[in-house]
Length: 116
Image (cartoon, rainbow, N blue to C red; front, top):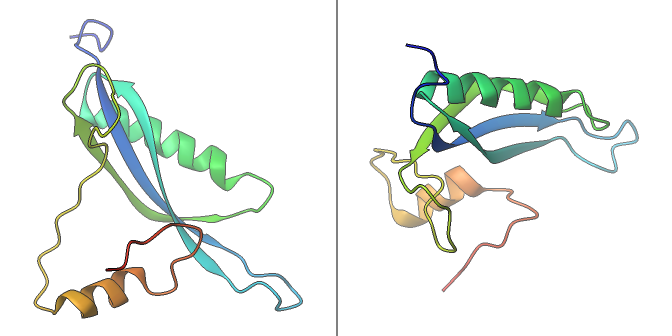
């Protein structure tokens, strides 16, 4: 079946990059997680779109290095609305809440993290 005949759904694709630090040491190297959305007929087609977008991004002016880790997530809603889930990742780890947050998000910058 041709992919044009298939029902197109929304998918989010998460990719991870390593941004180089500055040569003078003023800016340390950082990892960046990005989530972008695409319409595709299959998860495999969404993955290909995610790979292509990540490749384009890695050729940008900051020259981030793409890590070999792209994952897609199907968004079941036809129309995107405020509050719609566009990404979900379940991890099974034997650890405390605080240790999990410290391990996964240690060094997080440029995002807002809610702390109670």
